[in-house]
Length: 142
Image (cartoon, rainbow, N blue to C red; front, side, top):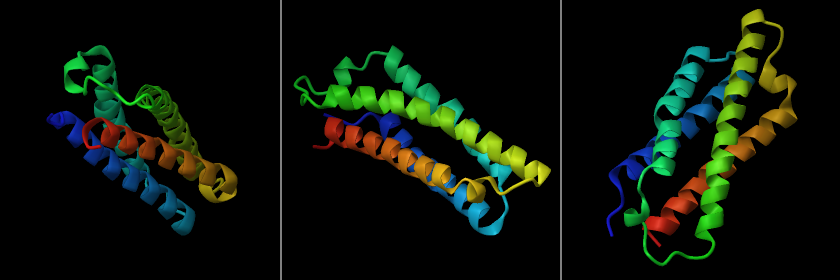
């Protein structure tokens, strides 16, 4: 069975998005500069391509692309990944907009002022990405 082309592209770009998200947070925390143009570019890309890709996979025919006999854990993993990824996208939008507003008014370094929230978000984002990688590997590689 061949791996769907757009699934490979989406996986690769999601890794780039993840590196970008972590870079934006790290630079803001460490250097007191929120790269808001880059952050909103990442959000726009994520919305236009990755979220729309997830919806197209949900609405389009994918039965022919997956193996006929699935491991029993793949369906719950797919449900978790789909829901959690959308929740994390909304959290990312909220996180970046809040950080941008604080940066714009110079009131605070949002990420440094809220270290537990920043670390929790970073871990949750990583879980979301790892669940997608695991799902991809389970469907097409293992």
